[in-house]
Structure formats: C-alpha cells, structure tokens
Length: 412
Image (cartoon, rainbow, N blue to C red; front, side, top):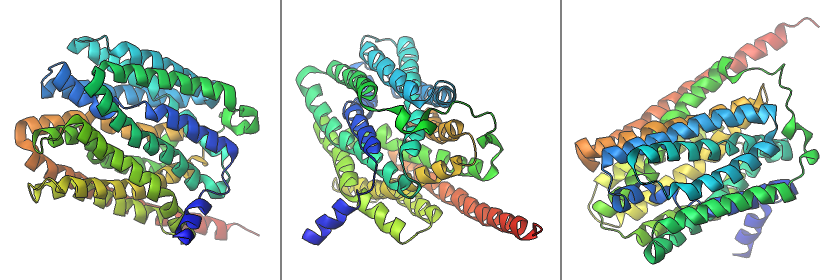
C-alpha cells in the first residue's frame, strides 16, 4: 500500500508552481459547473420543455462553444492568454447568474449561446498558458493535472448540485456556478504572473503556420469530432435515460457523475505516467479509449438490471482517462508547428462542434427511435472514430517517411 501511495505521489513531481495554480483555479471553476449535467433535466423537469426543444437549446449550447473557442483562439493571439482567461471567467460568471431569469424558449436559446460563447473563450487561452508554463517532458502530465482538477470539481459539483436542487431548486445552481467563475477569474488576476512565461502572451504570430493547412491535424480533429459526438451523450441523453428507464433521483444521478470524476482523480495521473514511461503510442491509446466509450453505450442494451449503469459509467470513465489526456497532448505537440492559439482553438472547437449535434441529435433520436436503437448508433460512432484514428496513424507514418527522405536527401 505504501509503495502504491509513493508511486501516486511521485507521478505529480516536477510540475511548475504555475501549473498547480492553474489547476487550483480550474478546480474552483469546475466545482461550480454543476449546472451542466443537470441542464437537460432542468429544461424538461423545471421549465417543461419538450425533448426536441431541449435538443435545440443544447445545440445553441454547442454553437456558442464553437464560436467562443474560435474567438478565444483569436483573442489569445491578439491580447494574450492571461487577459483572455480573466475576461472569459468573469464575463461568463455574470452571464450564468443571469440565465436563471430566462424562461422562454427563444430567450434561453440566446442566453445559453452567449454563456457558452464567453465561457469557452477560456479553453484555448488556458491550453496556451499550460504549454508556456510546462516543460516539454511534463506537458502530458500537466494536462492530466488540469483534468484531475476538472474532474475533482466535477466529482463534488454534481453531488452538491443534487442536494441544492432538493433544498432550494435549480436557481441555486446558477448562482453558485456564476460566483465560482467570477472568483476563479479574480484568482488568476491575483496569482498568475504572465512574465514568468513570456510565450504565454506572445501576440505576434505573423510567421506561424496555420492549422487549417495541416492535413494530419485536420484528420485528427475530424476523429475528435466524431469521438465527441459519442462521448457528449454522457451529459445530456444519459441523465434522462437514468431517470426515465432506471428511475434514479437527481441525487443518485449526481453520485454517478461524481463517481466518474472521483475515479479519474484517483487513476488518471498514475496511468498517464505509466503509459508515458513505457512510451506507448498516443494514437493507440486514443483508439482504445474510443472503443471503450462506444461500448459503454451499447452495454446498456444488454440487460435491464440497474447495476449495468455503474458498469457503463466505469467503462466510459476508463475510456475518457485513456483518450483525453493523450489527444490533448497530441494537439499541443502539433501546435508547436505553428499558431498555438489557433491550433488549440481548433482542438477545443472539435468538442464544441460535437456539442452542437450530439445533444440535439441524441435527444431527437431518443424521441423518434427510443434508447435501445440510439445506444447502438452511438456505439457505431465510436467505431467510426477508431477508423479515423487509424487513418491518422497511417498519415503520421507517411509524414515521418517524407520528413526522413527530405533530411537524408539534403547535401552535406
């Protein structure tokens, strides 16, 4: 037991103080994002919207995320990551508080779009900051630490959120989410010093390559879009499935989401270090993760036993643990070829794009075809993601061979 504990502690060594501060700020912010897993329930249970209406609102959620990620990448290149992060956190905090006062379909479409636009400006800026504050050999573990902060916040947030709903209703979630975003923004202003990492606020990318001309990266982004279409069902259709089919309460649903976050907190960093030490192929790990996520949905069709939801959560959690840190690391390493802000914006846009179609598509499928058929279709998306990642793997080998030929053909 002591040996395992020492291995766990050692997996965190060597990370810079700024990365730890970024993780703490992310933890504070994500602890408040308890609205997200309950949003589809809030719209159906509290506001009495139909599933197709909820689907369109969730599409506005995703569209705002796409536009926000793109703007975040542009702002990071023009005003710097430091200012972009503060603007995003404080602005989204006030918008989250305001959303609770919107009750009609049209106003919520606009409100959710604006909230996500401002909130997701944060992500490209945060990735650029993380890259600037990390040593090259520590980037994957730095990403993992941020993900641990996200998931630790996500472990406690939904469970507390379920209690808040029970005690004072959904309105309390928006207040907590908004205030924690504002506090996280003020903490960045107080704690982080961009002068410690000059490249973080390097706003002169005139000679940087564009990610839109990087064919391998675009293939990778397409694979992440498809993977995201499957994975994002966990945050919209799955809670409704838990409630309608297995008759779980909001508190029980919160506990399942909390278990997801807590397991990631316990397992992800040691597992990432294990794979890094053995120099396991990043693409291979992403393929395994995509397979596990796809199968976690198909598994739900095997039995009506309620314990299957726990097994499914464990499976999707392990897929997430394996796929996300290494896909993120792949994007950050590829970003070294050119314009970092736009590379990381495109990576975050892949999942924002998934938000547009995943939630709406899943809800529409459930409304028309039911859960059973929908879960098989989601599993099929996982297989498509695997195929695309295999294409990326082949493209990388071809690229390496071309680069090698160019190197060896240069005159001495």
